[in-house]
Length: 292
Image 1 (cartoon, rainbow, N blue to C red):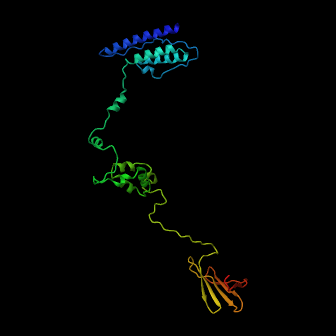
Image 2 (image 1 turned 90 degrees about the vertical axis):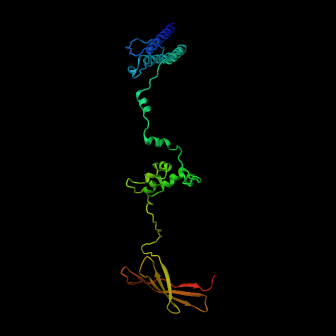
Image 3 (image 1 turned 120 degrees about the vertical axis):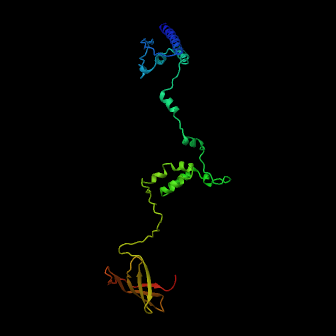
């Protein structure tokens, strides 16, 4: 019974406020109403209902502040389980909110009033909305328009100087918009230096040269001194010196099937360019004349 009385009291108060609000709207000059310190009738809930505080209620007008209080009452009625009373308050609040006038804040009105003006604004409005590559000949289309934008960005990222990107951006609006992408510009310093190991335009093919200490690479050349003596010389491309020199002797037996190859001398060259004779502890090499 107490809850029903509270709801009836709220309804009467809403009707009174609605009539007062209509009278204020009909007046030629609206005078601010003095704040009324009326206690709001809030039903006592069985549970521990949280206290709701709204920041900035003092800046709100009397009708808006009253609407916030009614909204708090709706929330507390719903938490208390009084669904019928909650529905009645919602209907009353919806009917009352239609009589309120929504005022746009001054900042939003200023933003709406700001608009581009002048010759530049007229030029911008006359520009087409779609960005395409156009050809000088109207009957022929631009081949560049067939390339997707993702591929064009990849091409711009592969350029090694900023001047080329700037020249491409000066072609048309679409080229300008594509060049504004930050990805192609991340490869450059502020002075235009490219951040890449491939900044040099000329590439020299490197050749692998094995230069191990005590193991030079080169080629062998043979020269027959006599019928049985052979001179063996070693040449290296990386070294200007010629080393080592070896004297070989080849013996062949007419009746047998074996040939004998023997090293007579072996000379090397030291760091000063002088010949150094090595001691030979190798046995002769025998090999067959018949191909197996």
